[in-house]
Image (cartoon, rainbow, N blue to C red):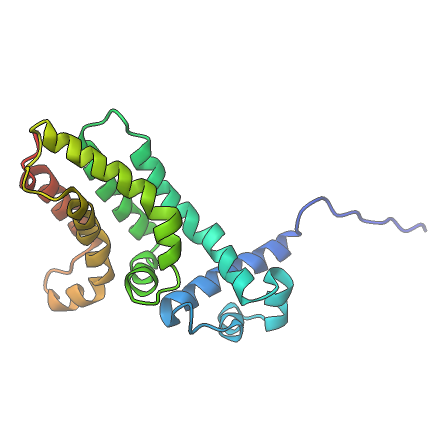
Amino acid sequence: MTSKTVRRGPGRPQADTERRERALDAALACYVRRGIGATTLRDIATEADCTPALLHYYFRDAAGLQAAVIAERLMPVFTEVRDTLLGMPDATLKTVLTAFVDHICALVERHPWMPALWIREVVSEGGGLRDLMLTRLAPEISAVLVQRIATEQAAGRLNPALDPRLLMVSLVGLTLFPAAGLPIWQQLFADAPLRIEHIRTHARALIERGLELA
């Protein structure tokens, strides 16, 4: 009987890919729970139920793993927000702002880790993602929104007392901040627990009727 050599097709074997994906998810979970700076490869290996050697095999070191989490887990999420806003050049400001709220709330529902990571690693001093936000994610979005808001004010279609820069900040305050505090609000209002849908409805009401938008 002759033996046949089984040739593997191009790319990683499925089991290999699944282990790598599990490692990325474990790293993200540790970053949210412990913080990027306080998380070690051993922490992630324990979370992923693997050995540190396996993480070295996939990512070389902690910096490589962090870079992979940013590229494969975080960047696609924030790119969705950017593409949504930049893909509406002819839409009214009301449409753009409500689309921002809707998209952020939808992302939080799909990625519950997002608000906590935002608070810990972007807003907090020394956060591991602050430079990434300031250099790669936020500039384009903020420039587009601020310009659109200023244009609407100049045309008399938006409350002139509003600061375009702070209105953009207010959008984050209406979405990510209350979402990050949901465990607190749900205990505080235990008789009528708050959910992401309540955050979305409240933010849209303020945008549509509280900003004196035409």
